Image (tube, rainbow, N blue to C red; front, side, top):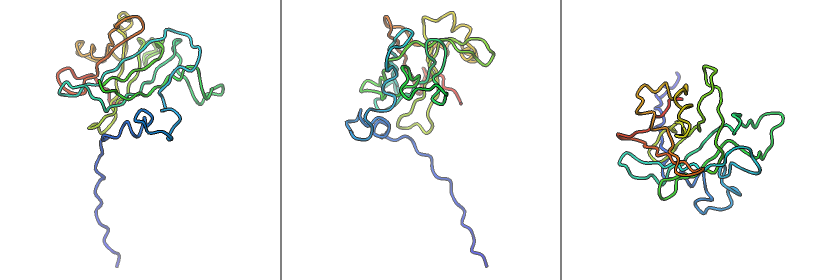
Length: 204
């Protein structure tokens, strides 16, 4: 007689825990020897076309407190609206511009990226979307990484016709994705994970 097969339970989901920085940016945590440099810490490796900018992305929890143990990854096009393809026949293992970055939030909850302002890429309708950066956010208490976008306040005309922004029915909530320009070449965006000012996140 066959032995009965026990009913197996689903493995409980796990949050990122307080170890996001240790696991993904060990050098930031003063843990040497894992990587020479933390992956994604540098996006520009030489001469590149386009406007160099700094993106300061601040993570804020539901209580309005900056989240200092989160991590942000960004993906974006280059200044001409093209994405770096690591599998392309002419790909370079160290491209001048990677199009991808990863930064931990500091004590003030800010993840800072030195990058270039992206060009416009075609949307699902074939029309050019506004310049934007795709964001992925993980932190303690988040089961699945959060996906959203960053747009630029000085691209108001392009933002007005953007395919994705126009899918957000409440125009007031579109503002949660617009980074304000602080000065020449420097932009700031607050990401509210919960609460009244919660950022728009996408189910991807």
